[in-house]
Image (tube, rainbow, N blue to C red; front, side, top):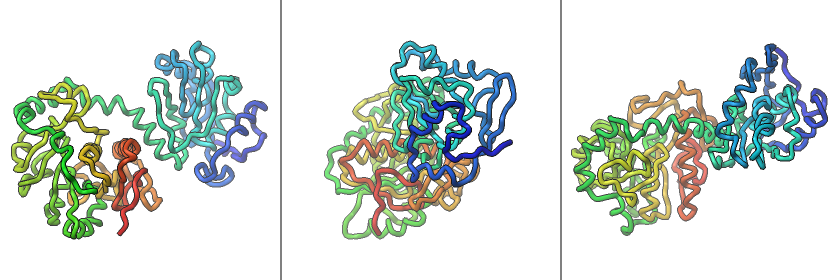
Length: 439
């Protein structure tokens, strides 16, 4: 094993073209750090039929057949005019694309690690693709949006070496990779989900739909309460707020309702979307006068036990389109979390300000949720190996699912510039587009 010298100088590059490719990039020192400082990346040479390398133990290309590996991506990319590659391994895929495809007008290659990129340049078997006029080479940015998924390819080795400052982009890339797997849990022909929706057929036909809540006179601010661990630290502050001179409007996610009841905090509305919810997690006691917004897969016994008014809602998915009494006018957005649905409800009801409480999307202080025993509602603070940045700029344990929900929530916030969003706590994940609520 050898530790590669990472200083950006011409020594070690195979050709002036490689050096020019490196010099043409301008890493932002605030994002990418110094190339002379920090931990060196450990390079291992892999001697095989196709010589390859591993960086920090991560193989950058197949030593068995890297060209066959590149061909696996071709069916989706071959007929695209503009292609985006996030990472490039050792250059086999861009080389193959530019030689084989007759459609490519622009190949955008986004670099995920400046240090790894310099090593990749030094060890690429072929470098002619770097001088192709169709190539657009750049450093990736945290704000990068993933347009046209069909024309996008993500190199897993590069993604594993991504700069820490690109953690938001990292999570968007992971979400893109996992999209098909996530969607598989909501197949319209799933027998369990169809059974739940059929059991609710009568209620879906007789209950008011969620759009009946739109257009009502509401105060300026809605407070959306999740069940993240930070709620335990801010619940007294929330108690003082709701019992103050201005009565706020509270929308609670289902698993936060019990904690708010115990704290004596009145709730206007509860939102539930989960097929696994049950009476312990969403108790119906003291639910008189509290509106319940639900989706067709919430278990029927939970809905029948609710004492307040119920409002049916749907999502624009194939699953809900197959539900009894589906109505596109009653659809709310969901990016995987009930928080998304509660947020869309508040936007559609016309609130000018939305403030999040207990929306941590992480595991501050090593806990999974407030009020509930850690792990009862799912998740584990130490097993996922994932992290996000909290409101104090520190890494906090999270999960790939939470990170995906965070990316979806930030996108949702960005789509509504007419609404001001606030976050009550800095202990959870920093949510782009929100301001921290003043004491």
